[in-house]
Length: 296
Figure: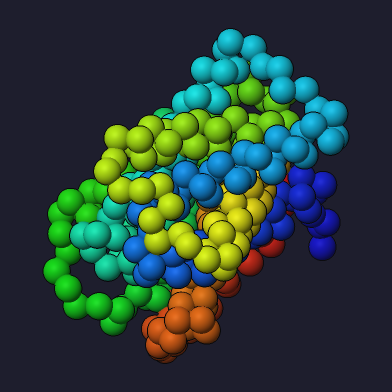
């Protein structure tokens, strides 16, 4: 049996870590939302703490912060895309069930594959099969999660989140301008843009910046958001995308809804149905199949 390449050995685990860590969002965010913290405040502190931690890491490891004007333009675009994806998804929760919103956002692997086709990079049939199977698995996971009607605005916001996230992945994979920038520095600047955007939103709002954030555990939840679903997930996404390509990295995002569902079941008492078990099984088998067949 042919061995996996060095890029695959780095890229596939990174993609899995991306999905798992991003799926931890509800673990840290739900207690804050339930206490009445504003979405803009949660996302601002999440990005701010991440930027500070990454900045300290760059200083301690004596890495340069220097970038060219062209690189700054691409990093600004990446930051706006990443920020928009988070904001669209959180706003979608106001209009449709979170399970449906998560499912719609997971359309991003399909959107990545379609965008790559326009860039004349056609995925192989195992990747297309994995895309279809993983999305089918996610659909199955959300069956019976709610019966409320789907608001068109919520659906549009979720699809918008998926589209800008797909563009974020493709640009990281295809842009030669930022190819020389380290994953840490890329993440630092992308999240810096997000922190500034949410700070601007807070300053135009009447609500106090720390509304609903009063205890030590609240601040620990914000720190958790900064570390795992933000720093780790964004950095490992860049690593995975650069090593195995945008399409395969996005397919591995299936671990995001899997993790979120398990967190909901174990931490928040949400039911673990046969639909969920079957969906998780299908998605994991599809990803395993993709990894075993495509060894480039």
